[in-house]
Every structure is written in structure tokens, then in C-alpha cells.
Image (tube, rainbow, N blue to C red):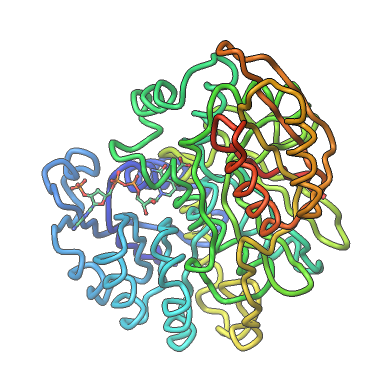
Amino acid sequence: MEAMKVGLLGLGVVGAGTWHVLNRNAQEIARRAGRGIEVTHVAVRDVAKARSIVGPNMLITDRPEEVVCDPTIEIVVELMGGVTLAYDMVLKAIENGKHVVTANKALLALHGTEIFEAASRKGVMVAFEAAVAGGIPIIKAMREGLTANRIEWVVGIINGTTNYILSEMRTRHLSFAQALSQAQGLGYAEADPTGDVEGIDAAHKLTLLASMAFGIPVQFTGAYIEGISAIEDEDMVQAERLGYRIKLLGITRRRDHGIELRVHPALVPIESLLASVEGPMNAVVVSGDAVGQTLYYGQGAGAEPTASAVVADLVDVTRLHTADPEHRVPHLAFKTNALIDTAILPIDQIVTPYYLRLNVDDQPGVLADISRELAHFRISIESMIQKPTELGGAKLIFLTHQALEADINEAIEAIEKMPFVRSSVMRIRVEALQ
Ligand code: NAP
Ligand code: HSE
């Protein structure tokens, strides 16, 4: 049988990785897919650079629309990134009846609903295993392996750059700025690291996971997003003392009145598997009513780990493209007409334990006043640490029992107004993984 013809948009980190994996493992891949998978067209900006990677016989263009409009191409692989040209090219490819494989989580988090609807109308597939947690086959697990379950929650370390930074801060006592500069030197973080350190990249991925977990439309704008730039070495040390580690988590959880969708730093119990995920690695825990908790761990980024997921999608599309579209696995795990528009809960409606740290004058009545304020807002203290500070004051660290975020916010506002309080209150949520 003739090889499946593929057009590659982008030949950067992931594009070149995909090219190398497809070529190196061509025979194995053909045996698995039932036919060869051949890249015949590549679109990039720098044609000469691409030529040096793919050799003399490839059609290379700096006009991606030439690839998506070429009648011989059956699958378009979008690996350019961004949400403008990629958006136009993906919709154009779908309109032209081509299947799409993409690693672009930003594109799908912002425009997924429109893209999946367009694909369903045209009867083509949009596969995106590489868009969440790189080489970890979490999409496959959630769309197929866990399909019997009512998913209760998904919690993941889904950004390698921030996990590397937090690991370095904890183990080597680096400041956030020092650890970030190290991550940039190693190529983990971009020159502009905002998307990673402020939690936006993780929120793109979490938005897709939430849709597949709960059968809801893709709703990035509903996500609560908080990054790691405010975390201090002091918090790392105190968290460890309390039996926790700080991780940037993506959390989505089913509640009675809606769905939690949030990315923020969180204390996780030291004995949990997520606490031992270090460096740039990713891990996702999914809790289902039948299976219990399952854990997926691996490299969430990088050329060949991400290419592993892109090529897996290429094989899937090659196997399934002749199947009746009605009988393919739905893009978001649930049939499009069965998606339910369950509300995303505002962050002040979440209920979780909290870590609070502040500096105060060391004088009688301070603890009593703070405890009274917490009690006034229905917040119960689980444990407390007091340490002297260099300036003759005291550092207080509280771990609370479960509390409503709206109550915590009001309590913090009241505490920060107290005359003996010398700092703002550092607040980090706790995730018990239950
Ligand atoms: P990259 O290294 O910056 O590569 C982007 C590629 O797209 C380059 O080959 C570039 O061409 C090409 N390109 C950009 N704009 C173009 C335009 N206007 N016309 C034609 N070609 C254009 O990016 P990447 O790291 O591979 O990431 C690609 C996608 O994968 C992104 O959506 C990213 O979020 C996602 N992803 C990346 C990773 C990772 O580890 N890097 C992991 C998971 C997902 P030139 O080479 O000529 O500049
Ligand atoms: N920037 C991402 C990370 C990799 O640090 O995990 C691409 O998804």
C-alpha cells in the first residue's frame, strides 16, 4: 500500500525530532500502522536551514498554505506554535479534508471548541497527544484506557520548566531568579519565560485535560492561573518542615456545583509520588471511581519525547482514517453532542487547606489575635510554627484545615491590617491528593 503523505508545518525542536523519529523507526512504524508514513512537504521560515536537516529531495516552502492546500497531502502536522498562523492553517487543512496532528496546546486551549467542531463536520481527525505532557500518553489514557470511569479529579505537574526551577530552589537553595536563569541556560525556559513561570502553559494543558475528564467544552478563560515567581526559599524550607514539597500543580476536580480548574503552586505531602517528581519531569495523577488513582510519569518536553507523541498520533490517524467518523474515538473523549456546559467554579469557591506565612512583632497577644481572626472566618488551625526573625520579630507559619478560599481571603485582609503585622501574608494552597 502507498505510504500516507504528510505535510509538516515547522521543523524546529519538535518538527526536527518528529522527522528524525519517523526516519529512524520507519520500518517499525510501518509494521504498526499497516503502511508507511512519509513526509513529503515541509513549511518553515528558513528554507536553507530546513534543507540541511531533511536533505535534497523534500519539497520545502516558506508558505505553509502551499502545504495545507496540496491535494496529495493527507495529514497536516502543525508544529509551528502560536495561535494566529497556526489557527488559520489548521482550519484551512480541515476545510480541505485533511487530518491534523498538533502539539499546540495554546491553540487548542483557546480555539479547541471551534477546531473540533470544524473537524467533526468534515469527518477528519485532530490528534493532539503531544500537546499535554509531551511524551506521556495521557490523552490516550484519558480518551480510551479510563473510559469506563467517572473521573473525579486530575492533578498534574505539567510544566517541566517550573518543576525544574522549584526542584533547584529546594535542593540547592537557589532564589527563584537564580534557578530561572539556570533553566534558561539549559534551554528549558524560553528567553521570555512568562508563559511557563506564570502558569499559562500549564493552564493550556489543564484546560484540555479537564474537557476530557468531565466532558465539558474547552474553557481556558475559566481557569484560575497563578505562577511560581512569588515563591521564596523560606517557603521551601518551611513546607519541608511541615512534611510537604511545593510544586506547580494543574488541578481539575468535580464538585457538587461545578468544576475546579486551577493552576498554582501547592504544598503536596512529601510521601506522595508527585512530591518526588523532580527536575523537568512531568507527572499526572488521575482519580477514577472504578480504577482509583493512576499515575503517568515521563518527559513532558524536548525534541524526541514530544516527537514520540506526534508520531503515535500519526500512526493512530493512519490506522483509523478509513473508519466511519462516527466510530472513531471522539476528540475530547465524549461525543461532541454529549458535552455538558458545567460551570467552572470561581477560585474563591474552592475548599482546601492553606499554608500561611507572615512576620509579626514578638509580643503578648499576637497569636491570640490572629487565631481569633481566623476563627471568626471559620478557619481552623491544624499546626503552627513560630521562629524568631533577625529584626527581633517573629515569623509565624500556619497550616489550616480545609477552608473556603473566600474566607481565607477575608481573613488575610483583616490580619494584614493588624498593627503588629510586619509583612504581607504569603498564602499557598495545600493539595492532599484525595
Ligand atoms: P520551534 O523550535 O520554535 O519551531 C517552530 C518551527 O515553526 C520552526 O521550524 C519555524 O521555522 C516554523 N515556523 C514558525 N513560524 C513560521 C511561519 N510563519 N512560517 C513557516 N514556518 C514557521 O518550536 P517547538 O519548540 O518545536 O514547538 C512547536 C510546537 O510544539 C508549539 O506549539 C509548542 O508549544 C509545542 N510543544 C513544544 C514542546 C517542546 O519541547 N519544544 C513540547 C510540547 C509541545 P524556522 O525554523 O525557519 O524558524
Ligand atoms: N514549556 C513546556 C514545559 C514544554 O516547560 O513543560 C512544552 O510543553
